[in-house]
Image (cartoon, rainbow, N blue to C red):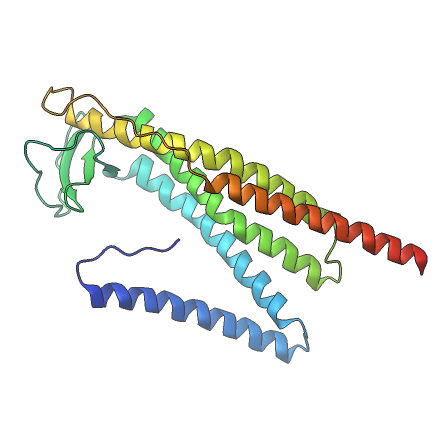
Length: 243
């Protein structure tokens, strides 16, 4: 998912357009290269290259979220502690004072997100775990498309490895999808409350725990695709045996 938060609509649309142009350029370069090399399966080549690039980007994202959650001076968390706070913090201007305990430096997005400094390592690690799970889930479609396209390019579209990969991905999506839905609000709420303190004005931490439907739906789709590829492999093997 690519999202842009901005008060300038034109700037936000420009950023989205730039990303789409870059993706289109990459796909065009791969397609032209495949055609010049005499590859007739240009769509497969593009799908394989783009999906592999997506997985690589998710891998690079691990380094970024690792720095943001463990080593950056501040961490952004959702202010899911109380419906109304007695006052708002100042705007984020980039300055970070030296603090010894978890302290709110500023807030943004209408006060729904707090920028916190001095967050304990345990809470930073919990936020990092949630971010890593998000990256793994984002990489799943890329891994699935890359494996399918790669085996199809090799002339083995129903290779058993495709079905096994899809089955493993189904389990990963189901388990990590549910885990993410549970851990994210816990980490965000604990981090926000650690900085806001236990003052009665803020109320006790409110954990809004929700398990969404999409992990089950995605796992079902991947399982169904795995069954289709297994069936295709059996038919292919029977056809070869008849010949």
